Length: 240
Image (cartoon, rainbow, N blue to C red):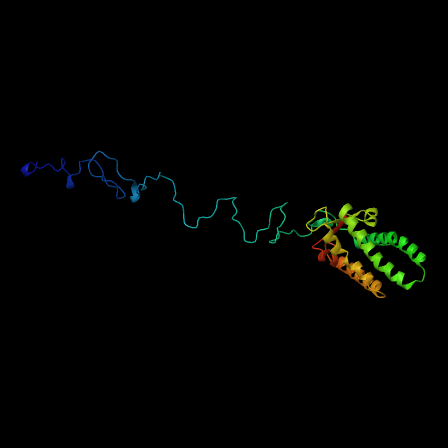
């Protein structure tokens, strides 16, 4: 017993009840009493009502596994055709053009022209023999027959979409844009080179030179369009 009635066993140093250890790791009891202590190590509860264990989104977070971001210059998926910015499509595989038909090859087109020329030349030579050596009538016949040739090709292409020679070899003429019907003006433009035959003496040579140039341009064009096709706005000779 000490003086003054102080009992050290009843009141330890600092006022802590005897026999109870101090909190470890810096753990403190909140004020007000009756509440549980804060977590050890100074851990704090999340603010703003966010549930415990959820992580906030990080800046520059990468996509989850299996998600690929779009790549620069990414190629179109299989089955998608690339578009030309001007609304045209490139020539497709297998020789099919943007009109949906297979272009007629040069040899077949030459054969069709030869058949048409023979069809027209037979009646011409019959009339030439009948006229004889009359120079005036011969020149008149050449001029008239040039108009007959133009009428034959324009009339057949407008009404039938083909000529007899093309029909025999399985070809047809499409209007610009792939339309089946070709108008008279467009057909006249693609056959206007025949009008050179009306020139006396040299008309035949000029027409032949233009025909050779047509063959060259057909062979060099991926869609087998000659200069006369492009002059007419983009006509197309395809397999029927």
